[in-house]
Image 1 (cartoon, rainbow, N blue to C red):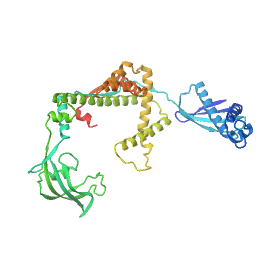
Image 2: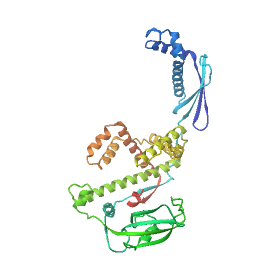
Image 3: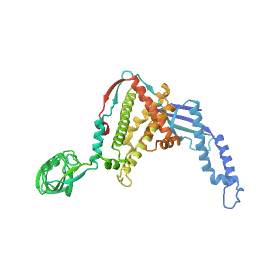
Image 4: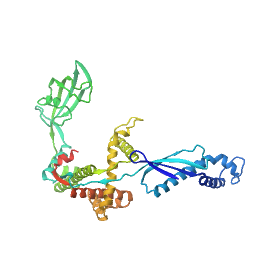
Length: 433
């Protein structure tokens, strides 16, 4: 006899019994099998009496059989009642005497929600579009040149984009504050590494000059001792250095990885790489816009067991990312998983919505779509054919591509059915994110 009751939200509780006869028969069988190999002092292997085996191993074998029997009985009940169970149930034994004729238990679990996808036709969606201009290519090349800038000393007043080498010290109410002093410190004017008031005080200065000026730190400055307060800086200028950018010639192009030094080939590679990266970011924007629209029109509850698991996974991923960037995580420090609950719930809901939508609209990834996306990814590598083979050699890697194609299909479906507004994006706007 079993009973299923609805608790809060997606939570359910199964109350049922399992017969002792069902358990004891399996326990006896396992003890006999165990007797063939068990080593017990005073008995030869394979000759240990059953009552001795029962004394030594009976409790553990009984608990093992009981656990398996509960799992099996629960699975059979779930199938019989067409329950779509999320994760693993939490079992609770109600009967105190485990040798009783009937053992009463309960299993608390969650079920998958009903996903109701509403009318998309009235929902506004922004589609980002981008067209690569030749000016974008030139701007990218200028950025690459600036990354290889060489500064040379000049005998003139400092101006924007110059590098100024200085000693400085800052005082608050006459006392030097922490982090307020440095020797032979290089400041590139206009780069934004220092506060604007500090950089402005260096404009027009010359090598050999010493000057003092007052400056007020922003109220939200990270240094709490000086945030929102006025300080006095004294600086000594050692050198003013003008930027000297490399010419776009064969030597520069070779340094950027074009072996034969062909400048036009270099420009074409920049054009292709920048265009590819820009379109990738456009795709991410459009996906986010489409997914937000689906969330707005859909009704469903998120299974909390899945949300908690996803929050834990996001927390662990964040820690790995921080460590991968060279950040030292103090021993024993753990980020609270609660920080990621909102994001985790959104991801779980989207996963359920996408699964339902793919089923309803037959948006599964087609083999030709998977092949096209693998080929697209491979083109950014030196040996595309090896990359293609790498993806196809592993089912999990191939599954990742199929999932991306599936998402593309969903985005296309949303864009076809929603009220779409196109928004042109500039390259710098896409790249700064």
